[in-house]
Length: 124
Image 1 (cartoon, rainbow, N blue to C red):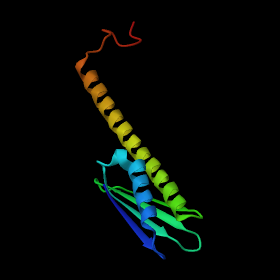
Image 2: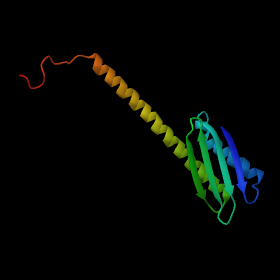
Image 3: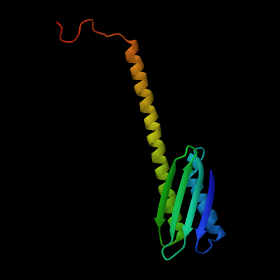
Image 4: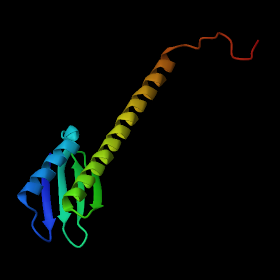
């Protein structure tokens, strides 16, 4: 997982860059095997904003934008929201795979077992 920090406007101090990098590892570290890169763009204009773009290895992308009085707070909020979105994406993928496997196994089980009743329902 590569973390790229870009700035527009004034330059961000190295201490803030390191804090944002640590926060990105903390928020997204558990998905590091699935994430290709994280691009964090800070804009220190009249209202500081932060945009976080998370790109996955299998060509998916999560884009989050946040605004706050302090650029560091905007980055923290945006990274936390991006982590929640990535987690939600993987929860959906895991649930979909689980349901797909379950339905495939049920179909296979129905093909193997004969009809348990010798007479059709309502034939008596």
